[in-house]
Length: 138
Image 1 (cartoon, rainbow, N blue to C red):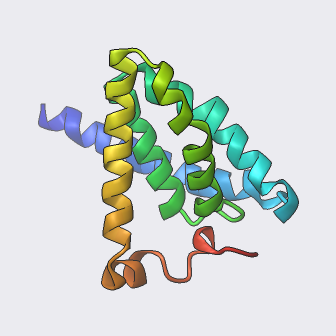
Image 2 (cartoon, rainbow, N blue to C red; image 1 turned 90 degrees about the vertical axis):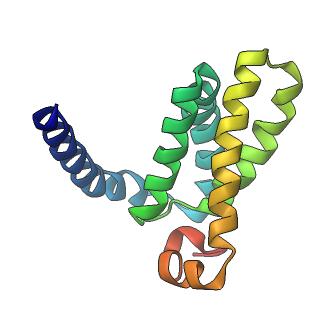
């Protein structure tokens, strides 16, 4: 079991390194004009379907969102994505099944815990200051 853990840890590190190299290339060409459209598309096509699929997928989606913030991907704007999440996902809650609502609850619980964590000046300075993903204008 220890060997398996080591293997998956190495694979995760390789994947994060790969994403760290790939994502800046994918987001580099975006202009400020299309950032909101891309954020809406990211939420509607990538995040939302995964969030409502299952509780595990909701947790995975949260960690993917957090990874995008951590990797400091150029032209990835957290504020636009959060806005798209609130505008596109919150209204859908009224039409969800019980299982989908549970998955949404898990995602939002983790998301709001992260936002609460960032609201403390010490954490904000350490984790977010200087990260272009948190800029209101580029």
